[in-house]
Image (cartoon, rainbow, N blue to C red):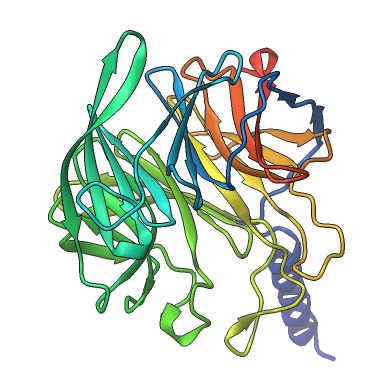
Length: 338
């Protein structure tokens, strides 16, 4: 073999090695930090929590089915302050899946997934207890888009997860639910793959927002500027992405249950299990700064499978749901880590 050929082979070897071992977009989870979650002394019977929001120092638990779509708890001792809302098909009423899309100033937006409606409420406070006052509904056609999660930005626009009929899984919309931008994909066209494969949890602070894929480990952070521009700030995979036909390869671990963004941090509940694992316990909470630096990899030691997450205003307490043996809300003190 000539010297030139040897040099070419050596360069190709280095290039391939770099591609497989030094991918800058593969996140190293680093060392685990064991941490304990504490149960509340007051037991509240609830359905599976769909999300948790801290509003005016009250914990709003959005639940699947049951007589009331929202339970309001005291974050100090976990006692039930009141049950709120109604199931039904009238204005401001909910189906089985009330999913909060976040706040914009003093307004709360809740997606009623079964009814293809977004409810708008004014947030009010009376005698230390927050309440919601119905304003209006935004309806959209079930035949055009199917939306999952969403998050409102400070500028009044909303980012939603579009499950079908759009090439990419994220859409930027205005308050009239007009589409302004379609982005956030890891493949050229999500419609060529199984329905719901790119379902994404979303969270925001100001006009910056994060995307966390549910079915595989992928995180991305964006900033929305101007009328409809979206800029990718950073992204991570938890492992190289592999497909077989139009499905995920069987070696792909599941992604994220929940994500929240605060003034300084991003918190995400990571599954990290194979769908075929016999024992599937989701007990990792990843903590990032806004620049995408992984600060902590918490492993909750309670042996509970974690679900939805919320963060206190001082960023020192994590509230998180668990599903076994019964649905409940847990607290985690992280004051020594912030």
